[in-house]
Length: 112
Image (tube, rainbow, N blue to C red):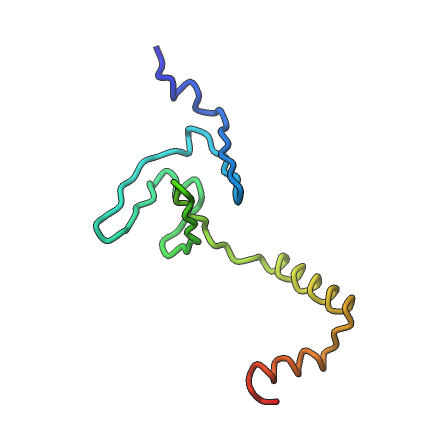
C-alpha cells in the first residue's frame, strides 16, 4: 500500500491570499529548521529544482503565518530593453524631453 502523500505527489495545490498566489505540488515540499542565528537551509532538492546557486539573493515576505523567499532574478538584456522602450514610450506620451530628464538628474544631485 502506498503512502497518501506519494499518491498525490503530482497533484497541484494553490494558496491564495490578498497579495500573492502560491502554487506547488508535493514533490516540491521539504522541511527545514531555523538556526539560533535565524539561518534557514534550503533543502538540496529545492535548490536544484529552482536552480539556486550559492550567493543567490531573495526578497523575504512575511505573511500572517507564512514566510516566502522569492529569488531575485535580474532581468535579461531582452527584458531590460523592453523596459527601457516602455519607459521611453511613456515619456513621449507625457511630453517628457531629454532636457527635462537632465534637469531632474541635476536637481537630485543638487547641481541646479
